[in-house]
Length: 339
Length: 257
Image 1 (cartoon, each protein chain N blue to C red):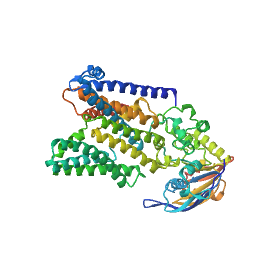
Image 2: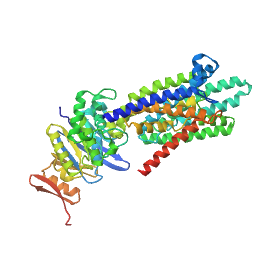
Image 3: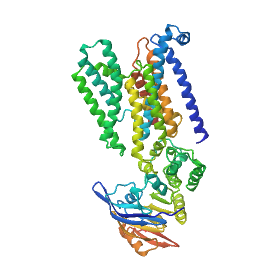
Image 4: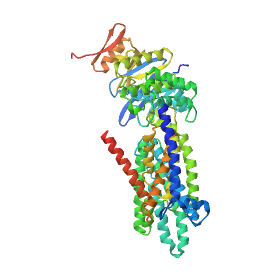
């Protein structure tokens, strides 16, 4: 590694750490009534505001960073695995699978919940939605692997992912046509939200990250070898199908956990690896972890802005990530066009 | 370095409806063997089959007497380095990082490179003259420079057998000559070098030539074999003629039909 590369990688790592710290502080201070830095000191003094900061804003802030980190990691894996800078974590049917899972739970609750109290119904829905989104995401990826007949051929796998995405979305639309009550919940899920993240959610998200990140990192050299082409990677003695399956498991786990806790938040997984490549182009061993950090910062920044831009009205965070991420990609395309 | 033997027995490969290889049998020994033939003759398919990268309809390839299907991929990779016809350039790896990937069969996915690995990588870059720009990224290089990086990556495997598909692609004449010298030197060291070449004059510098047409081997023999020279003219529809120039055999284009 040249000194210049080493310096850039160190600079990016320190910048991400610093930015994360600043954004965590901003996340604790940003509330429904705008910015209140004094709430931070209240946390230490044990006043009423401490409850809001400690039980609502703190888990939401940490949770948003973790969701972004999972999506950034999954995006970097997807782009390396498919050797395509436009690949995103939802490529293999996880998004449509999770969405269908949510719709099925909402429709079932609407059809069977007439005799239940609102509180019971709400609690059941919360637990059921998280589980259904996670199971749906994994089933979507599983179906893609089945239709793609394993991981032997990248193109076949990608096409299977597209077909599964379309099919599961169509089934979801069919269910909402039969049970319109599920439509609103589905819409909220599709927009994504960090508003319901609790300490429990943070524990689940952190567990997902602690499992997926080391697994992906251990296989990062395979992604490096794949950048030379599949035949070259195979000629280096790499057992591609097995290693590719392990990477897909890491990607599906990261995406499934993130989606189950925060809904479908777009563009973070797509943009985070691009930003890392722009600031510090590097082998996958570094870029996977840096993409996780970048994803965490991106989503937390979006979350803080979502809370404070139009306070007390909160902008759906998925809308903000789409605006920020989409603008960046358009700018990138424009620059490349000029080049 | 111990020599390896590679034996292809009755290889048949279909690509779609095309019979790319039709019962090809070939034994490869230490030294430099060049595979030549017109477009679509099955040269690259044969090389892929020899490297264990091609699904076979029939036949088998034996490496040191053991079928490739029964050899572990990593052990096979350490025995034979492979250079593809068209290298890809996705990713952000530097030249040195790409060449380092050649050590994967020895280091594995999770191992760490030793000082010996660093020496092999450095030598591979020196042999292909890419050490001077080892910190540049692939997308910053010309086609010829990239080809030298792919070559260095193949050399970094430090395998007793090299399978090279069109190694002279994009190279300018000085680097083509340097490559021929390098392949001859590797062959003299006891390695088995197999290369697919379109340039018949360069191929005639190899120890042995294998001539292919329509998925079959039509002739094989040493570079000074008169029957081989006649066969070369025949498979290329008399568009080339092999002549002697000083101590070398060269292919001369026939323009006066």
